[in-house]
Length: 339
Image (cartoon, rainbow, N blue to C red):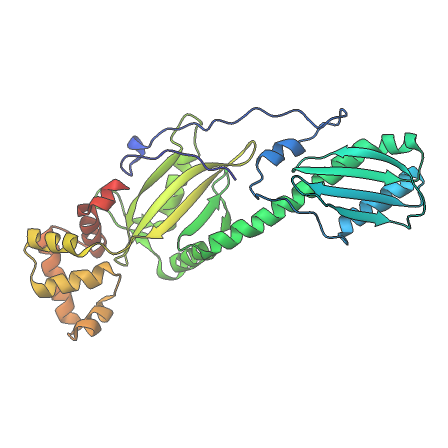
């Protein structure tokens, strides 16, 4: 997957940045006149060191059996060697008993290959192009499978929720954090609160951003901003148009809870709005996402008293809800504008 975008500006459609990815032209197919996209896929491989398939790989075993049948050979031997590796790996069908005809396979994915069997040289040469294509496809597919497993493992360990949308706006992949976020949306009905835009569910808000980014090719290729939620938390969101596989285009959404702001920023905000020490404590717990009951337990006061503190906070800051208050606090921090 290739992700490239430049982002800047406020989280409004009018200020979305525009960036066009530079997509290289398709390369020619493999030698011998067999048209293929194997070499194009080789460009997208990210593993640094290629590895040979295991000696008992069933797909290679089936291929060698088919080659033996097509060339009327009693045995077939395939040798694969990755670049910069002195010793490769052998794959043998049948029992080797004498020398046979040999040909070199031109393979993608940074491999060299040699095919040998005891059939006629004419039949071997006829089979060579198909063997190049079949082995090349196997190697690329194996590399892509390994990469997908590595990338999935990496995405599952990140603290960000990652959602991948196709060109139609349907979610085609979610890492473990993304799946948890979708479950929270279903169970808690997370909503984005703003004084400038109507309140909407978080997933709906993200889908609107995905739709704006996946629109016309000359439109914005990215969007990023902070989303104050109805539970009092703040979510940083980044939406990027991505090239999934050559001509296919998708959109990647990355959501990350905003980390607590430094002490001096909150102190400055409280001084500016004339908050009392108890109101400041209430606001700090509110920013952490605690509910009214949890704040009451934390401060050893009643929920009625917490609601009174919240009313005073709303009045002094000119806000009307938890989401607006958290958005105002986050907006006063330099990091919120630097995003």
